[in-house]
Length: 411
Picture 1 (cartoon, one colour):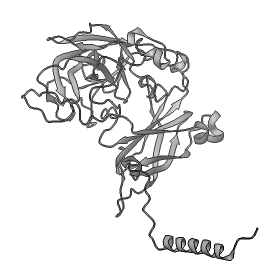
Picture 2: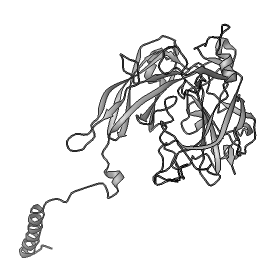
Picture 3: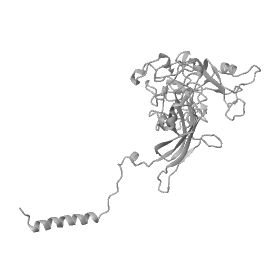
Picture 4: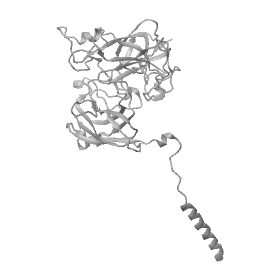
């Protein structure tokens, strides 16, 4: 049945009017949502790996905030990481031992305006020296502290200044409209001169109880030999003098007449309540102090209104390391040595180390649990307790190990 012409005219007139109204109005602005996180503008950092090494394996690159450098310079944690597969890096030479150079691209996306550094390593398949130990397999797993760092035979790398060899600080800037601009053409270099000599300084506390009192506590550390999903076989602890200015003379930064030594010792407060491995005032585990967070009373009775990074004063008892680092004529050996045990002294003195260059004494020892961390001159670390603690391991799919459950407690 046909429709009357007047009906079509009315319909078309209505459509025409609606179209005119639509064309006569400006389109509303479109934004993702009102959530500020979805309205954040970011850029990218990209470039190439340059590998001069006989090692073979996946290449891991970490992105750090330049103000929070990783060990051994600081205690910063990666903001992000990327894994470049070995086949992409080495191509047809994957099965050989040619030294390269090899190149492959990498990219970090969603990078806001800021200053950054890039570090990384080749996660190599390795064997112990002269075949004296079983072979490692690639063992990097970023989700656990016990599997997130390089081991013996891995090869380190970084974005460095080609003239000085020092790590580069990379800056992501914004244009006139406030939009972050991509940073391209960045090189991250890897070379066999940066081969990691030993496994991480995995340890167990073989002497010393867990309760921190009003007097200094001495803890005896011996190596932990771990195999399985967590594979650590250090021959001992690598000790060396600190020589930050590279003048061939041991440093004595605090002028106490005792040379400064590696490894460093950090005893940091864990979060309350008593559970897990989360550190105090870093509940999201991003390495940045929470805001707001717990602000403890300083020794002068003041508070600054900011979250504190609570540590106990601690360090190596130097006798054993210095003996290993002294030659027959009584002169210091500036090359590292391996010792079978370390003794650590923990003082009943708490500090706010949120400004590491000027730690502030606290009025009293904050009650709770404390983790013990060793930082080796290579940047490798180990801490107890860790994910091998029998109270934690089953929940994360790892094999429990009672030696990794030690925690220092301030009652």
